[in-house]
Each structure stands twice: as C-alpha cells, then as structure tokens.
Amino acid sequence: METSLTIAEVAERTGLTAYTLRYYERIGLIAAVPRAPGGQRRYASADMDLLDFLLRLRETGMSIQGMQAFVRLRSQGDASVGERREMLEEHLAEVQARVAALQQSMQALSFKIDHYREVEKTNRRPPLSGKAREGKTSNDEQHTTGSEPKRQPALRAWPGQAS
Image 1 (cartoon, one colour):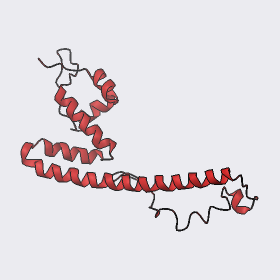
Image 2 (cartoon, rainbow, N blue to C red; image 1 turned 135 degrees about the vertical axis):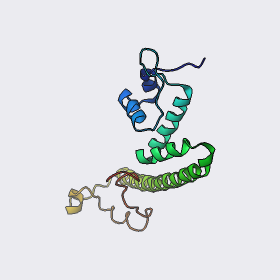
Image 3 (cartoon, rainbow, N blue to C red; image 1 turned 45 degrees about the vertical axis):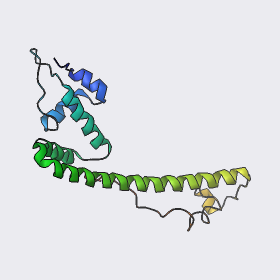
Image 4 (cartoon, helix red, strand yellow; image 1 turned 135 degrees about the horizontal axis):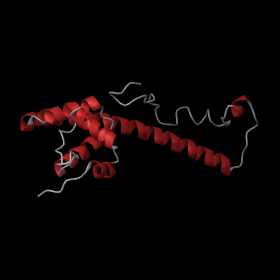
C-alpha cells in the first residue's frame, strides 16, 4: 500500500500553505485529493510529483492560467504530448531570455562595483559637485558610456502577470 501524506505534511515539504494546496485543488491544478475516512486529504506520491513540477513552473514565472492549460493538456494523456512539449519549449525560451537579461544586469553591476573599488583604492574623493550630491562620482559618466553591456529595458512583470 502506498504511503499518503496529510495536507500539513505536503505543506511542510513543498513550502506551500494548506490554503494554497486547497486553492490549487479548487482551480483544477491538482485533481481532487482522496480523503481518509475522517475527511482529511491524503496526498499520494503522484500528487507530490505533479506539485513538484507545478512549483518549478511557478518558480520560473509561469502564470496560474498557463499552469492550468498545462494540466488540462496533461489530463489528455499521450494525445497531448506534442502540445505540452511545445508549451514547455516556449516557456523555456521565455525563461532563458529573462536569465540573459539578468546576466547582463549582473555584468553591469559587477562593472560598477569594480569601478567603485578602483576609486576607493586610489582614495580619490571627487569634490561635491551637483553630480556628486546626486550620488554620482566624477568618473561615473566615462564608465557608463560605451564600455558597459547594452542596457535592457527593465522587467516590470513576469509574462502573464499584470504590471
């Protein structure tokens, strides 16, 4: 007989709240969870596998609606494998684009940190001009034009989320 978990145990293992688990069940992300004779939900290992994957999708920015679409396709079995693969390929491309943008931002931050370390190392303190009062050093302009990575527009929201 397969071991089952209570909602509290699943909440502890996944980091989701019991409320969120019940919500996921209510909106169809997970199938109706079988109940023990006392009415307590009992999650099977298959439920945990699906929850683990849904958490990966959520962690990578997939919307609830996107996860619902994936689960609907999954319920069709092998007939929807191609559609699920395409959906995940599109999502992966979005994740990779966000990672690339973050890497560019990290590179720009590292460049600026290195610049400030150099300024500190040479112990140069620029006079308090208008720019210095705004939090800029005298060398900021020369280090921000042409030598840092191409600037990407700010990410305001994950795809599928309201901004």
